[in-house]
Length: 301
Image 1 (cartoon, rainbow, N blue to C red):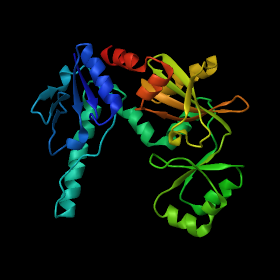
Image 2: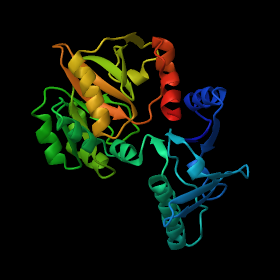
Image 3: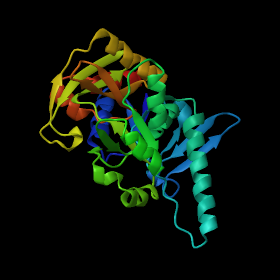
């Protein structure tokens, strides 16, 4: 059996996953998109849906022989800089087109799919899709219009700033953040996400197929990712929230995901986001949940 990992060995999670797959007798190779087109060669035939990778080692992989692909990270392609900007833009567009075509067109079992990746890139749409399931989300505004931002701020008792897609950590919004000059400077660069702050605690749920594993992330930090002392406490979900996790995964095309909730002091679960390629080994070590084992089983199924 042959399995690919979209990413590279720079991450501890993928290294552990690769080692455990290999101990099961699986052949595993990395598909590192940042090596394309300089060191990695791609071929795709739309009329047959046949695809090939030629790895930097010289090994050729026929994608029809690949059982599944684990989507860890799609790294930016590395097109050589050209003196002619227009030629460079064409080269980037052509390289991007074949890479995306191969990812979307090859008949291989992806964990997770392109559609799941797109939902993660478009997190405002992810929120709206989850709300359509009848699941509570925080009041949220995404905008680069300062008038709309200030108007929204008057309707919510306490706000947090979040990146639209990724990057910065979550911060509490202060009055100074909404001053005209400061807003104008920020909004010329990109829109911002303002979101209702929900007092409570963080719950993270990992969904693998039909299995759901949950833990409270106990931390006094606004963004628990910044807290090196955060504690993970295994949790038992209410039955309706367990079902919600499975519904969210299905709606967002996720076979494998980490879903972040805010559990309010009133006992309400508020959906924050679903990650199609979450880190998992630290969570596994802290809780004892068999995440890597279940991932191996999903990829080999």
